[in-house]
Length: 153
Image (cartoon, rainbow, N blue to C red):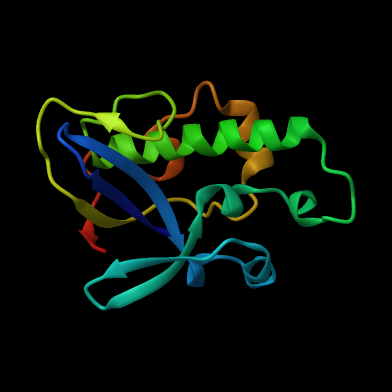
């Protein structure tokens, strides 16, 4: 599955950066596309519709809105998606050392903004298979390696 990893500078004096992993909509299973939040990411080829990793990982029961969704599932989905996102980002951006992706990261240098397209395993509805292993997951489990072949996003 292709993903876009982003490092974006937050304006201000200190070098604050936001890190995200987004999945292009064309990588998402067809039956999920109308259930997800759509974000438009600027790329050299124009703006590309993407969604958050959490929406891709979510189990099918997450989208069954007519059923009561337990708070436990929401909290667990958030935790698993933030951890998986951190593992992906650590494979691409060496300065990202946080266990879970923070809303913003203060760096001691200015690496600049960057976007990379990377490939990994198929994350469509992967929550149930990844959640039990969340404490032991590493980049290779996600189809990534330290020097992943990055392409311009």
